[in-house]
Image (cartoon, rainbow, N blue to C red; front, side, top):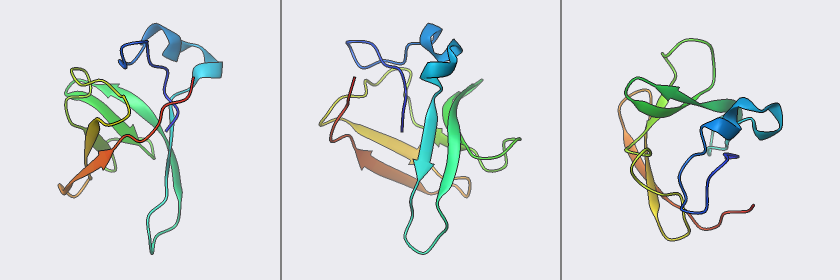
Length: 93
């Protein structure tokens, strides 16, 4: 995932408006083709989106309140409803 975050680990909304800071996600899943998408802001919070429309969107649980920092967890809700926790292992600036 490439996403502009501030020093506290929160998304920098203003930076997301610049093409060089495009918020992207690359999904690599065993047994499936890799998928490229973007990180979007929805009415219900942040999500990964791989195609136009919301049918394939994967919500990111409370990302607006939880920092993205090594040691923290992100919970992704797949389009089918399964919730998957992921541990943040590194952040690069």
